[in-house]
Length: 74
Image (cartoon, rainbow, N blue to C red; front, side, top):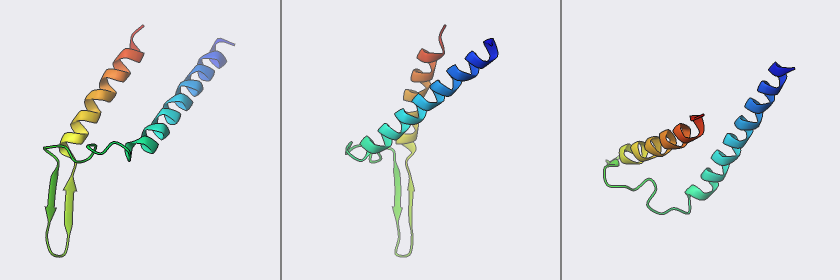
């Protein structure tokens, strides 16, 4: 029975993580600076546009690392 309880906890955690990600995606459009930070690279030419959100990716990586570190501690 111990194995089933562990799987249940993992499924609940995964569900909460997916719900938090969905909430973040819903609210991300309302944060005006997200995706337009200094350090994000935007190249626009006549026929194409290249956008590399470098600073935004680094910021999100740091935030997610801190969140996972806090939840991973026992």
